[in-house]
Length: 93
Image (cartoon, rainbow, N blue to C red; front, side, top):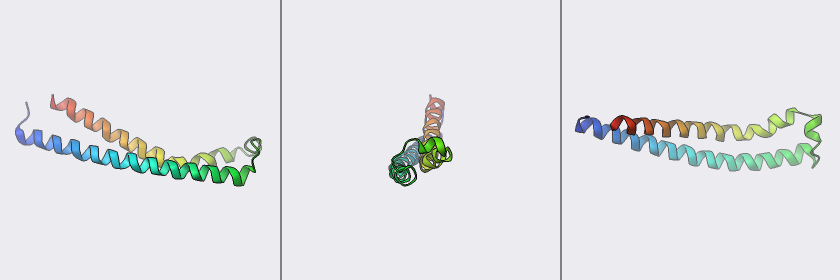
């Protein structure tokens, strides 16, 4: 059984991690939208509407996926914060 002060600090930590997780998730969604717009722009500029351009230049695939990398990283961080919340709540019981 935890003391009241330890319980209170656990709840505060959970709130902190939840707030951080939500901020990271929102930032990830915003970066995903920006990544999608960048993806479309790069597709139009480099492929000229020709899907075979990716076969001729495989490096284009990496260039096309690169704008989504920051959103993916932020989503992983948000997931890590959620796991910490679950660990803290399991610890509390």
